[in-house]
Length: 209
Image (tube, rainbow, N blue to C red; front, side, top):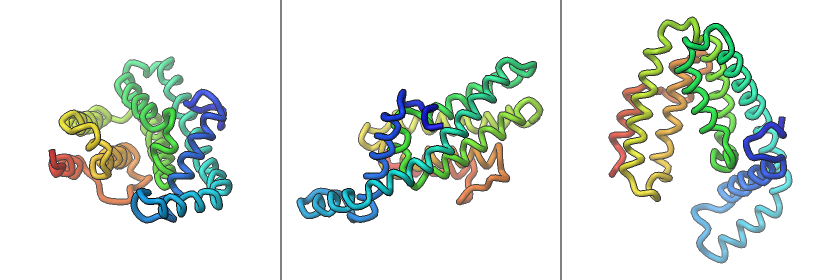
């Protein structure tokens, strides 16, 4: 499972896992940003103490993500060759773009350890969606909702300075859109907070530009 990764090699994936582990350890043991010698020494000590065991925890969380990603890719390939290929073309394109965004080179550190379980849920939701896409009469309507909020989010990002795009409140909107996908296409999987198209658009409107 680890070999089937977007990084190009297992060592590259493991480096990504190490980067994520270091971020997680520092966030846990050093309050605020590391801007002083004392904070740096505290971070270094914590990483030296906990890195080996934390990397194993990260790898254990990454393995099911990669397995689910492989399952989604296999289902995409099956639908592309099947009788429903025409009916599912738009869905496949959207899910493929979602998959490429969630599981990409550097995704482990980019996502963060705490959110890897959420990524598993997003991929399960994508798989569930693909399995129902050919027979779901509301697929097109639901896709239109996703297209609308993603376009609004893209417009927001375009309007912001590059450094602002990485701010927590801006990044969180992207995760809200992933939760909206779960709510629309695999409601039984649940979301940790209420989510709707209206809520996502309100969050976009609330961002200072």
